[in-house]
Structure formats: structure tokens, C-alpha cells
Image (cartoon, rainbow over the protein chains, first blue to last red):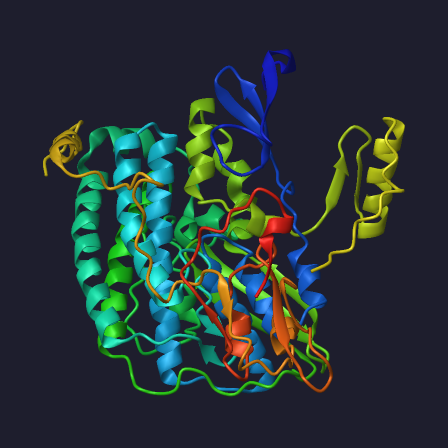
Length: 409
Length: 119
């Protein structure tokens, strides 16, 4: 054990140039090496779960869709599936196929986005520019199918809102050919570019046992040889009718995560092609009641970042009693401390970026930890509000008298 | 491909002589599909003033009011573009199909009041 005086603790964040969302990482260094890392998230809590409780199910659909900016479709699919199960409605086979096509297109755009972000973090901006250029093609397809680039809004309770016409099908096939050709080049590049391999290999190590221990999900787990994929283990929508190959890798590091993602792009392309060619005819949506019976349901989907779970409790009215979302990034944060320890400070940004973190998805609960006094407790909303009012009062600003203006149309 | 550094250099140089992938907005504009969910349009003639759109709106951005008398009804749609999240649920919910979306996305204004439109 070395002397504590040689150690230096630096806070990275909440606002910092390497990552686009607020997260604070308190890194303790010994020389250049990270000996301890504390992950602090919770700067982006938006109260979406609470907002869902005061709105009807159909309104909640659009709030849930905005939980994540990248995997918006997977969240709304999980929510729809849950509510449909509560009501006991079976959606049409065509709607199931359209949900799968959207989900796989979303995975395409998410993985291409990650490839760009990861390349940017290691200073490989040429790859960043080209992968994002190709991502635009996928986004254009999503905009054509759903009507928006990010919040596609294709899901509705009881099915989907828009159909895929034969012209659209043809256009998607054509665009997929271009994306596939480009992606083959990226796979080649990932496997043969020695600088890329040298930069990514051996950092952010998470062994097979540790991936299971920390409950890693998605490409992070699959890069540690954990064959975990909800599309296979618990098929939802039309995944039971489409061949799904789970991509795994044994590198157990950031390089492995990159390989898993680029290979998954190829898998997604073949799945979209299969789904488009084998799409059955049928209605888009079935009639759905406004009031949902009392009961609770747990719904799971495979987001581009990993397993996404939704818990919904209905109370017999048109509003849910409780909605709980656990996005994929939330599961992957637990292993972050282990991944960072032992690596160099310069590797920190890419190790954090390798789990493809989504901060706003993660921030759900308030846990205020007072490290100075060793005091740790969970604060409810009222006590947290009181604390913030007192905090500002001490600094000469009385916030308790401010009344939020009523919104008028 | 053989292993080695600088693999992307040739690919990048090739693109120097190609057309740019980006569009210089506002001098060039992206062509949007007709199905793109932009600003909501309203047809007062067919509206029955049921306000189902207002009930289903997740953002509370839309409201239909009767500006005529009880006998001779005349409806107006008040939309707050600043609050609208462009989900087009109102279009789906409308029983008379008097609401529809347009691919109009250039909705910026200099004040919040200008974002509140009456149709």
C-alpha cells in the first residue's frame, strides 16, 4: 500500500468537455494511474416517472418515449407491451413486425452514433465524421417511417400508427445496401487498423465473472462472453419469428465492445431485410380502452445499450399508479468503478464512453450522500425541496416565496 | 486489408474530391417528407369542438374554443407551438379528422407570445 500523500483526487465533471451530458467522476490518482473512482450521476433528474402518474396512458406514451433521446422506440415498446398485457390485448402480427423493424433501425443508428463518439474520444475524428454521415441515412429512413428523426412516435397502445408501404420497403432495402457496404469497411478498419486496436485493447477490463457480478447488460456484457440478449432469452414483438444471432466477444475490454457493436450492425441489417420480406398483412392497431384494469406488469425489451425494463402498476383508472423505468445504462454504471481502476487517466473518457452511457435515462432517484459526516439516507421530494430552499436562504435568496406562474394557453 | 496504421487515409483523401455530405442551412434546405410531423394545421369547418385533442395532448399545448354563440358555433384552435412536442396524437385522436400535420418545421419566433397561434 503506497503513501496517501502521493495520491491526488480530481473531480471530472459535472460539466466537462469530454462527455456531453452531466456526470461527476471523482478520480483518485497515484501518478497517472487511477486507484479509485467514484461515479456520481443524478444531475439530470427530470421526474418523468412522477409525471407519468398524473397523465393518462396515451399521454404517458410520449413522455416515456422521451426518457432517452437515442433509444426512444425501445422505451415506448416496453411501455406499450406492458399496458397491452395489463389489458389483455394481442396486437396484430404486422404491427409486431413494424415494431421490430423500427427497433433494429434504431439499433443501427445508435451503434453508428457510438462508433462516432468513441472515435472522437480517442481523437480519431475521421472515423467520427464518416460514421455520423452514414448514420444520417438511417435517420432519414426513421424520419420517413415515423415522421421524426429521433422521437419516431410509431408505437401506440394496441399496435403501431403508421404502415410501411412497398415504396418505403424498396427505399429501405436500397439504403441498407449502402449502410452495409460502409459498415463492412468499418469492421475491416476495426480489425486491421493497428492504432485503433492499440488504443482500445486492454483498457476498461471487465472479466466474464465480473460482468455477471456487476450485472452488466447489452454489448458490455456480450463483450465479456455473457450471452445475454432479451431478443433471444425472452422474445417479444416478432423476434420469435426472426432469426436472431447473439454476437459475443472474448476480449473483455473496450476493443471487444467496439467489435460487438460493429458486428451487431451487420446482424441488425440482415434482421431488417428478413422482417421486410416476411412481413404479414393485417391491421395496424386494434381498439384500445382508455381505462386499464388494476394490476401490475413487468416488461422487458433489448435496447441498443442492453436490457430495458419497465414496471407498470394500474389502478383501474385511465392513469397509472406507478411507472418505473430501468434503462440499460443504469445497469452498466455498477461495473464502472471496477473498469476504471488500474487504468491511466487518459483512458478514462473512452472507458466511460465504452458503455455508451445515457445519463438522463439513468437519473431516477435522489440519494444524497454526505461523505464528510458519513451520513447516507434517501430523501423524499419534500425534504429535498426544504433543503434547497434553506440552502439558498443562507446565501441571501429566499426562494420559498416564488410561485410558479400558471400556464395559460 | 493488411494490418497497419493509417488505414483510413486513402478513404478520406478520396472524399476530398466528392460533393459535401452536409447542406449549408439556410442557403440550402433539407427536403422533408410530406409525412414529417411538423406544425399542426386546423380545419375549423369540420370541427365539432369536442376537445378530445386537448384531453389527449401530453403537453397541454392545444385547445379548441367556441368564439361564436351557443346556437351558432364558431370554433378556433389555440396552439402553443412552444409547448407542442409534435407527437401528432391530437391528429390521431380527432374523431372528425379536422387536424393534420404539415412538414413545416421553421417555427422560431422572437418572443414566447408569438409562439401562441390561433387558427
